[in-house]
Length: 404
Image 1 (cartoon, rainbow, N blue to C red):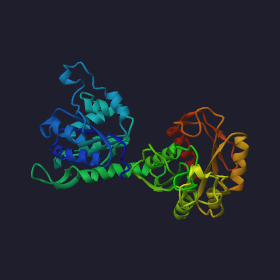
Image 2 (tube, helix red, strand yellow):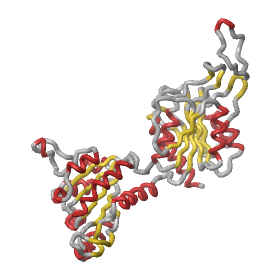
Image 3 (cartoon, one colour):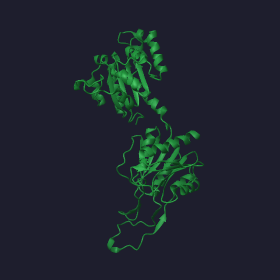
Image 4 (cartoon, rainbow, N blue to C red):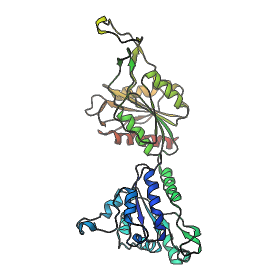
């Protein structure tokens, strides 16, 4: 899936014959998972209809400061639009619109939104040969670049006038590729391969019963989804969970037992740049598993248990280039126990939470953690949603990558 998945994109369409290409731009963006809001100038309606762009974007197309169908009673808030967007793309950008952008002439919704945008702004010029090379137009393009806007240069080719030369808007596929390249380069974890474990393990007693725990996997899934959104190549190794959604860029391996999770981790470990072990792996498993369901009437004297293999310690012993981050759920002396685990298991960091903290631990949508990195003071966080906790952890990971 594309790095554009989940991104909010404003497409500004101005009056140029190249506007006929904008439905394809919208379709490509939507196909890559972006939400697209189209804003058109009045002149753009001459070349492509709002109905067409509304159909392909699945959103109402905005053309003026107020909603015309509501007799001007509803304001199209350009400030809110500018804050909503992760990127704004002006394509085609006519000579007139380029001039208004450069001079801050906010006489239409497109320009007012551009001036309110807090996001990166891309612009793809489209006009005839002599218009494109006119010194005034060239100066406007230079001005926009100095103001931090990103030029998608016009190409050479056949123009609407019948002339051949520079001024043709770049093709939709290349415009969308330019946005993808930008976001990929800006993604904090771009190019990093990260393995994450999540959920519980179930250790079978018989074909229908098992030893397990109450882990929901929510923390691990939040980490995987956030890491993918930040540009990482993510493999999630998940024990049995339900109700957790997954980012399309995450590869998920489903396992059940601790032994299966160990096997999956060892397969992925060598090629990983970082590993975050957030799974609640069972510490013990039955020494024997019966092939048939144990009948209640037959009774059961007891279940003999043996330790499972410590996956985190196993990875720590064979660690080479990887950054290895563990998780620890404690009930007493959480920080002291976590510090010991960093040393004994050869970790680079550990995330600690305590059963004593209300709203933290298994099953909650929130968590309260401390982050302990090797030879550094613990960083303590307040209770917050697990999506935000995932962001905190991954920002620490980014700092650790930067320090390598």
